[in-house]
Length: 325
Length: 259
Ligand SMILES: Cc1cc2nc3c(=O)[nH]c(=O)nc-3n(C[C@H](O)[C@H](O)[C@H](O)COP(=O)(O)OP(=O)(O)OC[C@H]3O[C@@H](n4cnc5c(N)ncnc54)[C@H](O)[C@@H]3O)c2cc1C
Ligand SMILES: Nc1ncnc2c1ncn2[C@@H]1O[C@H](COP(=O)(O)O)[C@@H](O)[C@H]1O
Image (tube, rainbow over all chains, first blue to last red; front, top):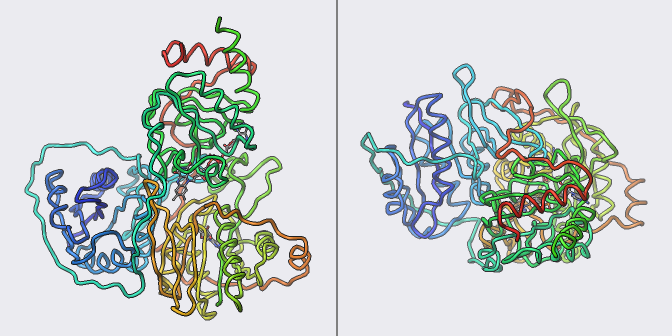
């Protein structure tokens, strides 16, 4: 059987999500190392319509798995239909976007296919004709290189691979299959939209963001005072602060919170977990204040301050007051 | 209702670590004590909440790791878990999810749990794999990244709220037996109570050895650990805290984010 590299597309409201393109970019890198046909697979009631967008983007083949009645993501449906659809594709590598959806169906799908599974893939390089996969461990402090035997399902880290639009050379085509599916164990009861992203975060030019390193709730006061040094600023935070109910969830920055891109993002006592970086990586200028010189946030920052934030932010306020006539 | 919680030990998020000589694992220096993973604590908390709500519920905890990991089982017992199972491995260090899953599956398959809870991800490997792979191996229904859970015994199902992107939650009904991975939420994991700690310290743990049936070929291999590549090269400010404060103000003025 001809071997292939499969990309499982993620889509919402009839459109591919940006992370799908990143997973395609990861597949292209593997293809450069180990030539094989790339097949993008789209699952859902509107698979055929969504597949058209994939075809327009690349010269690979696309498999639309039309599942009547599947109008939003259901893990059971994805595992079941994909394990059938992928059977005939001879997939060596299966690239899945690393969203809460990819993490929900990917690992189980791997087991069903008899494949192994690696997550948080952020880079691929070649060694002796084999792809080597890079991911981080220990909250971004350590980088690990892993080799795996095909078939392996790869959960691709959002924000790590860049998709570049290229001229379409070959002929791509959509193959459509229809799969009947009815839930047996998992029933969707709907969605709750709890935390509309705060518009203040979207409009702010400066965001001063607090992490678990602030240690005490009272220190939020310092964060607010630092924010007030800047025009058009806002205060935000990492997930643990919202879990603690020190900040409302609508001020959470990250994968499951807001995506922001201010002129200045000041991360105070934030370690730089992937899921947090996903929401602020696009900021134009990043300043990080952290006691741990090894914290992963410094890998993303433009300016690093290794200090206790309580001391440093107080000094910052004092120096600012002194210098302002 | 029979519940199992999977727990493991890891250094705390801000523990200073360095790559050891083998380049295969890390050593933790300083006084940082290894502890139960943050998300595992949420899983234990959720299990105890169900135990308090559903009469006749028992909660076991399992860990698949070296002998030192007994401490996380004691912590779980301290929080109110009834029974601790230690599936011993000879060494610590990197473990393929496939191997961990096959060990846990061997240890629990015959025990007919109704509900298994795990953390959404571990603190050190942060894979997010062991829960959903275990579910599939045991043919349990599965949902990941949940912030709340309610059991309906009469209907033999659980209702779960999955935390997803964009500040939204997906509501799902799952048939038992089910495996659910827990995300952090406002449900603060409780501290071990004094009476439970006394009980935990005197209670025997069940220690078993399981050989993974997974041959080494199908597992990925860790080739090398290194320091990560930097995306941006941070300029580290030097001097006293006050010097750094002045320097930062001047940088921000030059960039015109501050007037
Ligand atoms: C599916 C999923 C989705 C997630 N979504 C999000 C999300 O949207 N947003 C988000 O933020 N997280 C999210 N998380 C959680 C994320 O993985 C991290 O756990 C979280 O971002 C950690 O927050 P933190 O950096 O504030 O805390 P920690 O990781 O605990 O870091 C605290 C930092 O403070 C430093 N520190 C301690 N004391 C001081 C001091 N006195 N002065 C200065 N520094 C100090 C420490 O060195 C450390 O680096 C998600 C996780 C999962 C699994
Ligand atoms: N060795 C282990 N023993 C027991 N539980 C584990 C082990 N490894 C992982 N888990 C569970 O699986 C979850 C996810 O781990 P991971 O897939 O490594 O991110 C953890 O939060 C634990 O609940």
